[in-house]
Amino acid sequence: MTDAWEVDPAYENYIGRWSRLVAPRFLRWLAADPGGAWCDVGCGTGALAHTVLRTADPARVVGVEPSASFAAAARAGADDLRFDVRPGTAESLPAEDGEFDRVVSGLVLNFVPDPAEGLAEMRRVTRAGGTVAGYVWDYAEGMQLIRAFWDAARELDEAAAKLDESVRFPLCRPRPLHDLLSTAGFTGVAVHPLDVPTVFADFDDYWRPFLGGQGPAPGYCTSLSDGSRTELRDLLDARLRRDETGRIALTARAWAFRGTVSR
Ligand SMILES: C[S@@+](CC[C@H](N)C(=O)[O-])C[C@H]1O[C@@H](n2cnc3c(N)ncnc32)[C@H](O)[C@@H]1O
Image 1 (cartoon, helix red, strand yellow):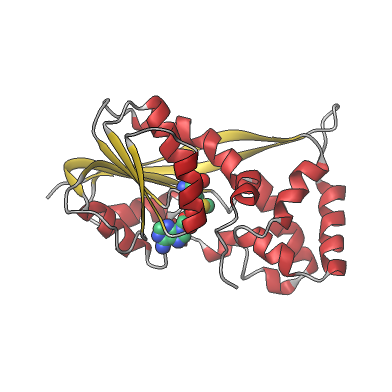
Image 2: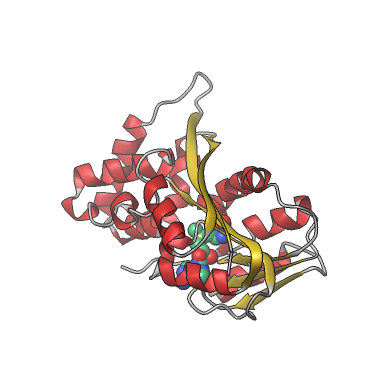
């Protein structure tokens, strides 16, 4: 099963709304000087690129995105002459050597077939002394909305184990991220946790985005028979704790990473 990334409202409801909460925290951690040319690799619908435009005072921001519909949504979401989106992938960035001061990427590195190759490309298009940085979800533990989903799915279906993102993406932990950046030749490598609240008004608010088919867990969910999907739904409905107002108050942890380009 390949991961689908193309339907904008479904993506926003599933992950975009939470990535938009991580992005400002990530940028505060990065504490970049104003100005400069930024690249947002795998910009999707623009969660990170739009936040850079709004809060980091960049000279310009170029998004790179393989999905035409996500790229169109990213463009439509920012009426800003400093912003452009180019079609492309992390493995072959449509950019000149050293074109950018900062290359960032939110929730993408684990989806790049060869993350080391993706990082090498990000390094190539960053000037000496510039920064490459990003964040990925902590699928194994702190990304509770996805963790709860796979824990339930694995209880009901042995085949779900190999699709669980904590199994598919062992990179998304502090030590492997640190090692990958160090091996790629970056200096000043750092990895840092970023936690955001993910509060659902009710169970339907939690469950409906899994029916949108965007990303690994919704892709698995929509591949199930109606009966199996109902079983999974009912298990999650029984398991997720509500607060006194009926809300499901979870949290999501992302691991932010950064490194400096030295040549
Ligand atoms: C989880 S979404 C993150 C989107 C956006 N950065 C955000 O934070 O909301 C993953 C994104 O990575 C893109 N993507 C998948 N494979 C990629 C690759 N090889 N190179 C660049 N982007 C890729 C997808 O099209 C999608 O937009």
